Structures are given as structure tokens and as C-alpha cells.
Image (cartoon, one colour):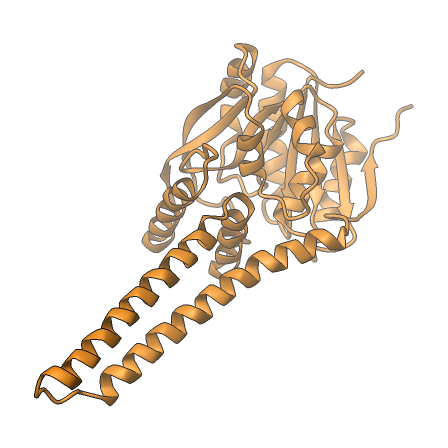
Length: 312
């Protein structure tokens, strides 16, 4: 019999916290009182994460483990979980316990009321630096301004999605997947549930600044071509300003006795325009890189094995 709920849990090097994650998830799901499965996706962990989860599978028939052949990334792990989930409603939660599984029952109630997507909305972020909070706030608002898709602010992948939503997202062909954006793009009836994001229970963050920047660029290029339009507009503004400056220089040369200041302003203008040109070329490269990646048509991930308790 297929479960009512699936819980997709991507995990990468989470041996310090994975047992606590399993215990809390099991307790919460049992409290809901309906059939469920815990679907852990081991994203190429180099520590003992896979072995610990495999132990859960031996003793608990509600647990399944997907092992990747290597680390394919957070979005790939969530995609694998969604494509292999069997429930009518799918919870998505990271293994680090910053997002509390204890609000699953509230999400489930919203789903039973008829909502197809119930996403967690952070009212407070504990244990994070002022810089990370500020950049996250700026990023979410900038992303919303750059796309026509209604992307909720202060949210992550922590959510419940209905089977219809899961199937719709699974059918989308992109290889570079920004899950929360795709879930918003497909539509359906959506509502938030507010919560306080806690500090990590144990271990270290898997999203350092470098990965956060790559993630932000991936999100923007996935759902908006406005940066290219802005680049065109900026180029036109600089061209017009340069033309007007040339007219000013010619006027000063032929109709006034002013000495034309030369090198400092010229070098400054060259450096400014060249910097902008290089920035625009880099932006274009990001989009071209995405096109190249999609044309290669390689799979988003490769599964090495799926482990679950054998039925007697």
C-alpha cells in the first residue's frame, strides 16, 4: 500500500545529526497517525552518513535510502527524492534540523484544507551572522523584482507539496533545477506556515559564501532574462553619455579657452566602461553556460543503489 506522506531528506556529510533527524522525523510522522515513508537521499557523503541511514532501513520498513554515485548537489538530491517519492503529499526538509519537522502536522492540516503547496516562511533565523541574514534578505527581494513568477520571500525548500505539484515539477525538462522557483512556476494553490529557523543541531553548513553566490546566480538565470535587458539598457545609457561628453569636449576645444584635462578623466572613463563590458560579458557567459549544460542533456544525478527493508 502506498503511503499518504513521503518525507524527502537530502543529506550530505551529516553523520553528526542524521540519527537525531531520523528520531524527530519518526516521532512527528507517527503523531500524524497516517502511513508515511522517510526517503533519505545521500548526496555522495564522504563520512558515515550512508551507513547510518542504511542501519535505519534494516530496522524500519518506512525508511528508504537513495545513494548517489557522487555529490551532485542539493537540488539534484531533492529532485531524486521527488521523483522517487510514493506519497500523496511530499514533505521536503534538510537533515540539519534548522527547519523544525514539528510543524509538519500544521502543514498537513493546510493540505487537507485544499492547499497544494504549504511552504515554510521564516520569521526569524537563529545562529546566522548579520551578513548572511542581510544578503539573504536582499537576494529574495532582488529575485522577486527580476522575475514575473511570484516567489515568496524568506523561504527555502522546506515545504509540503501535493502529488499533482510533484508530478508537474518532475515533468519539467531543465537540468539546472531551482526547486522552490519551479514549484512557484507551476502554480496551484499555495499558502505559508510561519516558523522560527533554529541553529544547526550539529555539524557545519554545507552552503558557504561561494556556494551561496553560485546558488543565487543559478536562481536568477533560471527565472529571468531581465539582467540581459538591464545590460542592454546600461550599454545604451553609457553610449549616450559618452556621445554627449564628446560633444562637450569638441565645444570646449573650438569655442572656449579652457584647457582640456586629459589623462585622469580619460583613464577613469576607460576603466569604468571596460569594467562594465566585462561584467556584461560574464553575465552573458552565465546564460550561455546554462544553454550549453541543457544541450548536453546529461542526467541531473546518477543513483548507485536504493536501500530499503525487504518485505517478509
